[in-house]
Length: 95
Image (cartoon, rainbow, N blue to C red):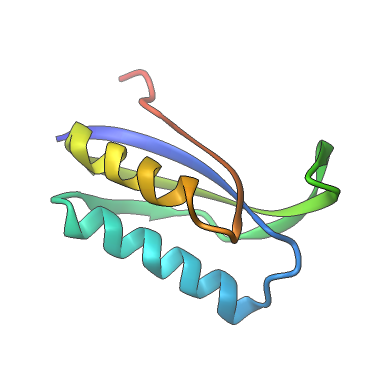
């Protein structure tokens, strides 16, 4: 399995329960596709570097996980159509 790192920016108007539901969905997508969550940084609300879709803030979360390439592909497919997600990026860190 390969290591991946994902930065996820969620809408700032999500409450704690909504943000937790989004993170639970990410976790279930990773584990459901043969991966494993290694570490999930605590979410924090921060100002965006530039305005995105009339939003000036976002809830940032960093997720470290292991999986096959299909795990990252499925995660990308689902997060692209999720309304609560403003931006995300999945990268493979140098080993």
